[in-house]
Length: 82
Image 1 (cartoon, rainbow, N blue to C red):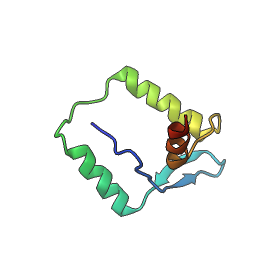
Image 2 (image 1 turned 60 degrees about the horizontal axis):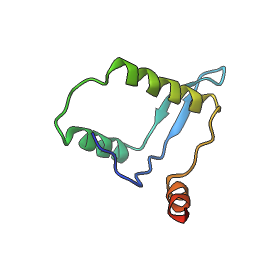
Image 3 (image 1 turned 90 degrees about the vertical axis):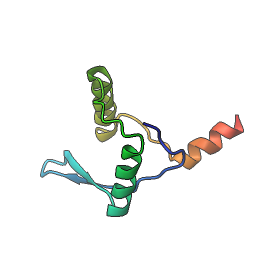
Image 4 (image 1 turned 120 degrees about the horizontal axis):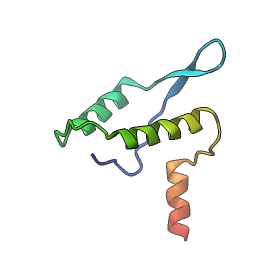
């Protein structure tokens, strides 16, 4: 699977009564784009367990505010300046 550099996904986080994130909503057009991108290579191989654990850890860090997120365009601008 490949990712498009500069792809921005706008989303809204839904939380439960305790403020815990429970889901994220994205516009339907972005969902369809992601669905098409994921289906381009025809690879339906499952993500290995170790990588899945790492992705879950990173998502939890984001949800719980332990990391500072950087806008993709800002990151590329900083990278080009180096």
